[in-house]
Structures are given as structure tokens and as C-alpha cells.
Length: 294
Image (cartoon, rainbow, N blue to C red; front, side, top):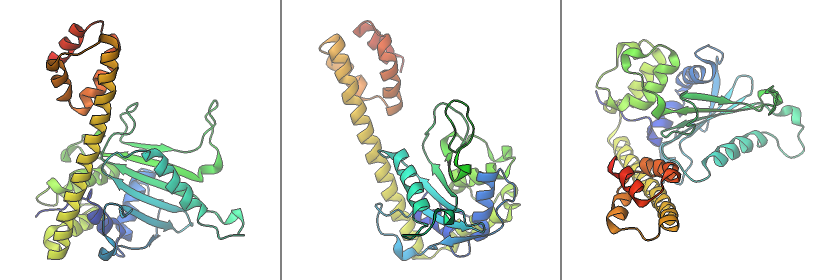
């Protein structure tokens, strides 16, 4: 068996947003939002999966929208690469979905709670090791809740999840493992297959069950996403590099070409670290020593 990655937008929508995916989405949302408790019993998927809608990376096609039985709105999104103003976009999408429930002239009591579940393939919150982080409005000093959880923001950061297949305990562990590592599997593991909804999701993700047209679309979408990730990473590194070079020149004057070359070859992560450690340097010799340790 060979499984497609749920991180690819086409696969993500097919798995979680198809007309037959209600049970899959219910299990996933109960795992992530409610810690595995069976709070959500039924839901309706808004604008179910339609392969013909996938056109370009500019489409917001990674979104899956559902309405719960109590009227609450849930927006689920997979984001594989950081983008400028990402946090603002998440907040805007939640606010827009919440406000769009009302037609002009309708009353506020008709508004239902809105939840945004955002899955990222990059780290958002360096201040915590938690894979899943949940936010509601709270008073700044006393920390009590406001707005009765009308808006909830829930983030799942895949790079923070380090558990192996044998270490999976909870339903949320199993769903997060599926999202992160399904494409590395060559069969349906017993501890994943015992969850019927995950087994069904893996069967949908199984390439043998896909048409030639679907596999071609997945290949093209996967390549486009990788190109986009590369473009964003390059732009991010280029911007950090310019800033760090300006700071070093301002403090130490002209920089030897050998040091410039070493700095240009640093990874984005090392450039971040250099930006933090730079304030501790007293001379170019300190910078050179730091570079030699990399």
C-alpha cells in the first residue's frame, strides 16, 4: 500500500470534506477540540469536495467547513508554509464566517459560535511544547473568559508531534500521526485501524483506490506546494540575511568576504539564532568563533 499525504490540499479536502466524510470529520474534531470525548454527534459539511474546483495555489481549497447540530460553525484548514500576516488571516476568516451568518437586518441572537481549527506544518508558538493549543477571549488580568466561547481558535502544530507509532495513546495522537506521517506508511497499522474512522481515512488516502486523473492532480498539487514552500523559505532567508548583514556592518564595519560567505550559507534557523546571539559579540572574532561552531 502507498498513501498520499493529507498535507496536500487535494487529499486533505477529499479525506475530510467529501460527502461521505461526516464520520471521519466528527471523529477528528472530537479528538482535537474535545480531547476524544464524543461531544459532536452529527454535522453537515458545507460545499463538499469537488475535484473540478482545484485550480491553483491561490484558491482557499485547504479549507473544510462544517455546521454542527447545534448550529456552531467549524472551519478546518491545513497550512503547509508560513505566510505574511498568517495570524491576521486566521482571525479574519473566523470573524468573516461568524459575521456572515446574518443577513442584513437580522438580529444578533441568530449568531452561533464559530471555531477555527488550523493545522500547521510549521511551528507557531515557540513558548510552549504543546502540539494542540486552544484560545478563547479572556480578561487580561484576572484571566476569566469572555463572550461565552463565541469564538475559539485551535491550532495543531505538526512539527512538535514526536510520538512514534507504538507510542500513540489517545485519539488525538492517532489523528495527528495520520496527518503527519500517513504518507510514510506501507500498510494500515493495527492501532490506527482499530479506529474505524481513521481506517476509512487511510483507505481514501490509499493510492490504489484513486483514478489516474486523481493521482496526476495529487502529483501536480504536491509539486506546486513544495515550490511555494521553497519560495517562501527563500524570501524569508533573504530578508533575514539582509537585516543581519546591516547590523553587523553597522557595528563592526566592513566584513571579510570569507565571513560573508559563511553567513550566506547558514540555514534560516541558524540565522534566527545569529540574530539573537549577535548582541553578545564584542568583535568580529566573536562572530567568527560562533560561525565555526555551526
